[in-house]
Structures are given as C-alpha cells and as structure tokens.
Image: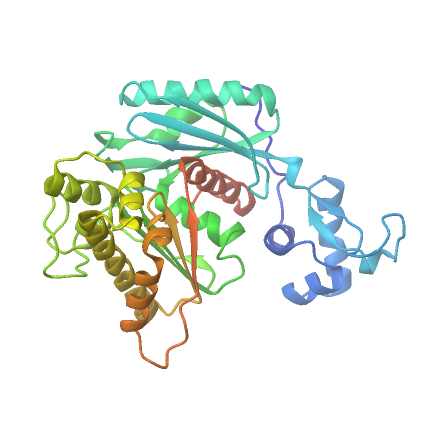
Length: 384
C-alpha cells in the first residue's frame, strides 16, 4: 500500500509551533510568539516552511470580512486539518470498529466489520482489509492507531489481552507489514484519555481525570497537561477499589468493589439473580426510573458507588475537571441526583463543587481515541 503521507521532517522549533497551533489554534502570530517565548523574527522563520508545506494556513481574523487583510502580523495561523487523515481501530471480542479522522480528530468516515476469530494474523489481515477499503476514499492516510483492552508495551506489543486470549502479540508490526503505514497500539482507555486531553474535555487543563464505566472500570489521570502512564493499565483498576464493604458479591470483582457494583455485567447479574429476568442495561435503567423496586435498588447502589468514586478522585487527585465516559453513563440520567448527593457527602463541606462532565461513548469514540494516538505519533515525531 502506497498511501503513506508523512509530515515533513521538522526541526524542534518548527514542531513546537505546529503542536501549539494544533492544540490551541487559530492563533495570532503575536499570541503564538508569546506562548513559545519567541521573537517575531524567529517565529516568521519557523512558520514559513510550515505554510509552504500546506500544514499551516493564514485565516481571516474573527469578525473581519474574508477579503479584508489587516496585514500579516495580525492574521491568525491555523492547522489545515484536512491535510492528513488518520485511521483509528477499536478491537472488541467480536467486532472491529474503524474511523477516519482529520488532523484535529474530527471523524469523517466509519467502517465496522465482524471479528470472527482471535488469531493475531487473522486480526491483522482484517485490519489491513479495512485500511485498504478506507484508503480508497481517503488517500492521504498518515498513520494507524489501534485500541485494545489489554496491557500494551512500548505502544507496539500486546503483552496481555484476556478477552482476545493474547500474550506477547506484536500487533503494530503485524499491521505495519500489511499496510505500509506507521502503526501505534495502546490500551483503549489510554487512547480515550489522550483524545480528550488533546481535543476534548481536558483540552488546555493542567489537571484532568477520566473515569469510564461500561463492561469494566477505566481510569486515567492527566497532570501538567500530560497523561500519567501506568503499568497497571487494564489490570482491573475497579476490582479492588472498594466503595461499599457490605456491597454485593458478583462473579467479577471483590465484594463491594467498583466493578461488582457499577459495571454493566454486574448490574445485569444482580437483576438476573434477584428476579430471573435477563434484562439489558437500558431496560434496567428504564425500570429503575419507573420505580421498579429491585431495579431501583440496584441502580441506586450503583449511583452511590459512582458518587463515591468521583469524590475519591476529586479528593486525592485534585483535578480541575472529571470526565465520566463509557457505555454505562446512562446511569446519570436515571440516578444523577443520587450521584451528586454522594459526591457532596464524601467531600469537605467547603470544597469547591466537582466539575463533572458526562459523555456517552460508543465504540467509535474509542476508535477515535486510537486515531489520536496516530496523530500524536506523527506530530510528536515518535510512537512513544
């Protein structure tokens, strides 16, 4: 495949300019020079090759007529987001979800295919097939990001993924060989955190946390504007995070843990064990909202567990904002007030309110997070 479109080799100064505009643009030259501590002359020297390459573009000032030029020094610079395209893949036990994004991570295309087996070569073949199909519609592909629920080493090697049954699978190398594109692989929660830090709810924040609820519990922390990596990613952060010592015992997670109280499988298990009915998560939420005694009890306990988690994160990590994401955040519609009451009960009375943002995430959001990993690989000049 010959669709590789790499960024021009950039000097450290040029790269710093491009990254600043990518994350915060459009920016005037005056503001850009101030942010980077550069003279106007140095900035002009650094931006010239970026404009000539088509990576940066001069844009009209906000509120000014498009045809009216105010002179170069005041004309803002912005990234040409459509100059490169990136692929992001989220691998689940039975599907691969794919997206194509711009350089600013806007999703412009999607492709999903069933995963019929877990043999690493077969999975790599499927990813290559999806890449080839999407490349026909997006010829400026610059890289591939892959999100996996598992432990990933050096953004290339899947050390362990229980749901795929993998150990020490060199997934990045397998896909690179088949596509000819640079590939980065990462834990799926880490990818989502990076996406929200660069382009989403955490953009511009110094301290930011992400809590995901769905099939499991995920947690990511950003300090100094950068994600804090952990060797415990996908080691079951919620299995031993006890939020109610007298809580339920479920097949997954310790008694009263975040996993046993809050994940979708555990909530479904509790209802099934109590009533014999095999209900979906959405059906349970609807029943709880209608006052069904057992559904309301389980969802209320889950909401208290969520409020306790959020309060603990706020108390110890001191983030400016906490993003609640994942397939399970519908609990905020059904029992949001219980969550907020529990947060307040577990915080100092004079503590500032927690800035809690919720985002219902589907698997395409996880795939977008993987695409952001590919964007970072390109703009930072390395995969790690």
